[in-house]
Image (cartoon, rainbow, N blue to C red):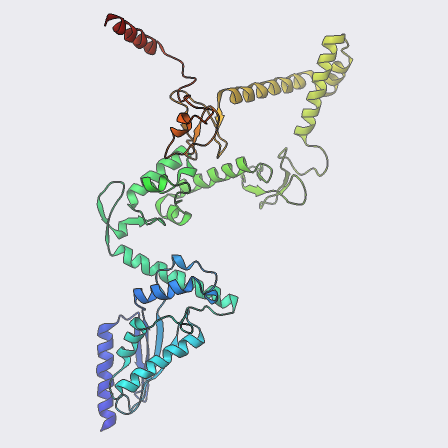
Length: 456
């Protein structure tokens, strides 16, 4: 009689749990002896998660994870088996598992679960167990986040926590509506994107913004478009995962090419592009053997001359420079002393046309460098040469957005740019408009002003 009554109570409890929980978080089965067993995933309340995460900041056993980025913790799984005499005369057999709680912590949680049975003996208690796991846990010296001592297992637990948190946050984000901070239209989260700085934009506006930057080649400007972020010294950078969602494969390929070019410009001694036809990959130079570069395609080449590796033999470009210097000295000797022996010897060995071509190229390169140095100012951050065509001496680099003075090349505080030109201690004091040539219109305007003043 009692067994049949218990079976009816168990059946009713399973029906109630199916109504409360989704099929992803609750499942059960009945074996040939009519014994029910199953599992329930108890999603810990957000406030409880926050308490455990805050406690993990100063907890050495919580691993090396940056817990400030974690907003949700994976559920605690409760596995159960219901004896035939449950709930009238026997307690359910339960076990707990959780990736962010150690054995001691799980034992403490289990004791709390067993206390519930002691207080509610004779009643169906599975849902009470779950409520306890979701809402009643409090961090303590024993009950705290612990990923274990095994580094491999701890790393796996970290990945599980991050993956669960990302999925949970995405689910929450897509269920709400947001106002795009560019077009100011309200969109559902499914059509929006939240950057790491928490600014939200609709995907269409963010995609258009990035497409313009890619077209212009401003890869250093791929930062949050919100004004508050752009004012910061280290603004929020739009990450590769976001770029993958917003841009086409062609645009992503262009970004990779621009990044490689930027890397080559900043580190010409450590990187080179493979010169092999059809390859062109960026190659990091060998750190032990100077100038040696080995590409993934199998081609081994010299970083200086970009030709096949020639060991300790001088590069073609290096030899050309030496020959050019010899030819210059020979021309000077002939001009001063009338002795053309060295010049004729070099022309006979290397060809007069080739030597004159090298000489012309060298002169053109020097003239180009002199012109660049005399008419431009380098950005103090990215070192790009910038030429001012009009306006005042307060400049902003088009590549990295650094504010600087065109006269002295020093950085300027972007929040108070005029302080550099107004401060008496600055060498550019009162020189905001120095170097601006007056146009005909400016001259006419000045003459008219003088005439008006004379007529008063």
